[in-house]
Image 1 (cartoon, rainbow, N blue to C red):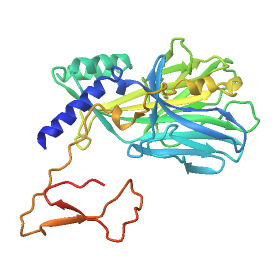
Image 2 (cartoon, helix red, strand yellow):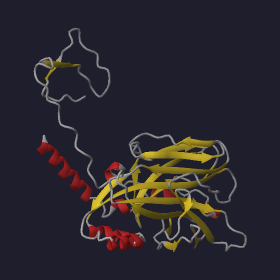
Image 3 (cartoon, helix red, strand yellow):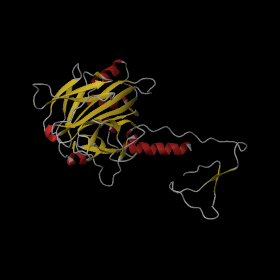
Image 4 (tube, rainbow, N blue to C red):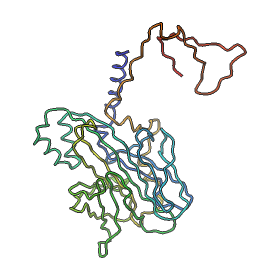
Length: 347
């Protein structure tokens, strides 16, 4: 049994190695099929992971979801969907107004060499963490990281052509689109960043147009957690950032990272955007990635089989025949499947 587990673990590592490099460190966002809707119109909500021109959808994984909800005029309600499905959610909004789609996960883990971890820190603008590790002499060992996702998308339902309004919904790390300040430039967009409900300063915030090959824009948040970026109209935008803190003993990781994103349309971009939806479609013949599979750490093996003495159990176990969880009518004299106690029966 132990040898079989090792073989499975090795096969899993090969599969993970076939994924793009630093998959866990890629951007994550919610990509609605449309950002401007009519009342009762169907919208699909796809979970996307990628970087630059590469983007792939993720299947819905109930074991990872802490929050997947819409917040709008009718209040807060969970986004319906099936485990393992892509798109991850489907919704219809009856009332006109602004809606925030919020998504938050629990922790997943990854372990990587120190040099690779430091390279990734500089890539996402976490030089302060790299400096802290050097100061404490953490450079000569492998690093275990816990990470979580905190994503939002803004939808406008109705005939109002203006951009959807945003507000805080209580994510642990949250990007908020603020209404234009009086006298602000027409293309200047203000984003506010909150960590545990408080402004977060010094974070690197990135803005990229969905479906565009153009280089992303970047800026650091100020002491109030605000960043101002000139975003042109006529596009849907993804704003993203990552924050990292030292991991706690209870978390079981050296560092904890939180990845936040916000997707919205500039005022005249609130139109049908089927090209954006196709950007993270799964190629034909390729399976949609699982959220759990993106963790570079293998789940713990199942506990060993409990071996009981012959005096504690009867010599045989009778198991009814089953087929794909459907009821199968037995003949007049039903056959019995007899399984020894030291075997495993699968249903």
